[in-house]
Length: 284
Ligand code: NAP
Image (cartoon, rainbow, N blue to C red):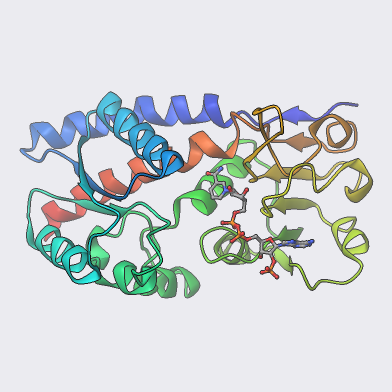
């Protein structure tokens, strides 16, 4: 039996259609949802991510502005810019595209953003609230993954979730969100021993390592759901995931492709968070 594909592209499209109505209703209530993205330097990948976010925002009726700062910008100047955006009532969401140049302390920058505008969900207040299960902006990639699992009614409560990767933006928060949904969660990382013994126990396997085809069908339990977060470029320049799709799909019951899987969902959840921030601004 071949696995059913969870198309992030299709689900993202459906969700974005709904968001168009939400954005329109906000506009009618006199609020134009607005996302400001700060882009520092000239990293081509960052530039392409930012233009993707801007295009997607516009398509659903979110105003989007990009502030471009030179690679040499000082940390203080960047922090000043954030303070201005924090107090600008027209701005509902602030996103600083990472990574930042080495002379800037990324954590300091993340912590400068007003948590009420933290649509990336990386501020320690957002993360702390997520940990204790309070309403907050959820980090976009983990939020997208949980949304994908739920869209297929894949059981989560009581299931064994194995997450490979423990970054602050993907691995740790996705495990936490699924723990909040009553899964039993195991984290694996570069020091984990007997990785295959662990992954073979997973009902849901989430792979966020950043290595081309790191996981193949041999690592997967029959009937598991496999979420491939990785984005890698092959030697031929093709986009590929952390999972060897062809061998994995013969064992798994559900699988996400790369491209067209987690990636489009990440941007979609950013849009969702921005709409949420605009709604909250009315309540204040
Ligand atoms: P990261 O910060 O580099 O983290 C990679 C994780 O993989 C680390 O926790 C590392 O363990 C673990 N790892 C490395 N080698 C391993 C091994 N041999 N066995 C087990 N674990 C190992 O990466 P990230 O930011 O989480 O991103 C992961 C991937 O997802 C990347 O390809 C990235 O491009 C992609 N990504 C995609 C999206 C999307 O929207 N589609 C969003 C974000 C990221 P240690 O902690 O021990 O070093």
